[in-house]
Length: 308
View (cartoon, rainbow, N blue to C red):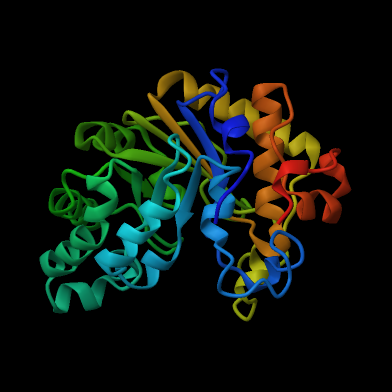
């Protein structure tokens, strides 16, 4: 895919290269007709299209299985028209959600598989962070701290970030541990229920990281809620301002800051990513035309040069 407007998007000296805001993932069926043209077919490159608007995208598929190195190299090629672009990627769930299986086999082998899969992105200098995301059930214990220490050692050399969702981790000793390990703390914006981790603006490494999961209290812990229902949330303008204030604080302490919008349903992640960029830059960023039509609150007519 080519774009006639790439020069206008990428040559401005005013773009802040220390802050990147973008969505989690790019391949969603419910984005057709809202983000991408409906029925565009295989010839339409959704990743390259989004890389014209955003300087980062978090890779989700790497959570379910380490991607083939050839696929990762292909992703790097498809975003090269944006020299500011950096991927972040979720590490394989075997390392976080299926630890018993990893331990029964070989954690070292699993980490090596992740290393091989991410190598093409790292070698292309396009991997901003490798995120290890643990579920709410992962609590602060000495055993789990020891596991993290071993995991960080096996993944050493990558720019690591850690997401934990249980409030038991919210203690200075843990943040000091991350600083000593050189691992970035991933701040989360999520429904705060019971012992969940609350809003924060912590920086423990050169990378600052914030993930926005939405605030859908009704379905967050609902066992039969599907992925779309759990992340179906559109942040309000006052909430965007609140999140942006936290990002400013994170950015002041970090060399590079990543903000990932994970409220993906029907393109809401893109709406809120654009609004965060506008709030932080005090000027409107480029908006995909279809998205502007679907969400009039974006206030623009889209980018006339970027008709899909």
